[in-house]
Length: 83
Image (cartoon, rainbow, N blue to C red; front, side):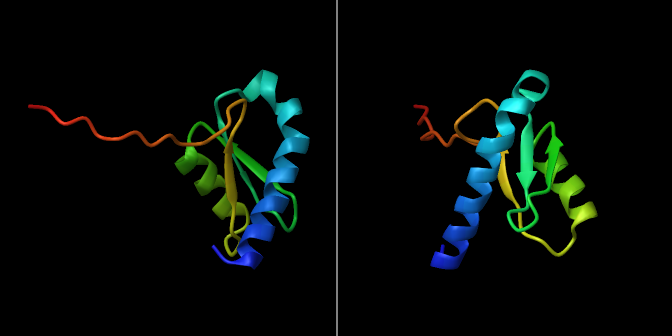
């Protein structure tokens, strides 16, 4: 991720911090897609739904995704090896 991308993501993260509290009660666990330049955001039950809604409204933009009420959208765990 380049410096320009990182700055844009940081802007998206700050916007998410501002709106998360207002969304928490009604949308906890859902995913929000934020367009950092405009500040517009779109909510979905998962990343795909949020992305589809966001892209329909702003087709040429890039979005940051956050899970409302949680520190991350996804969690990656090491695979368990079965014997």
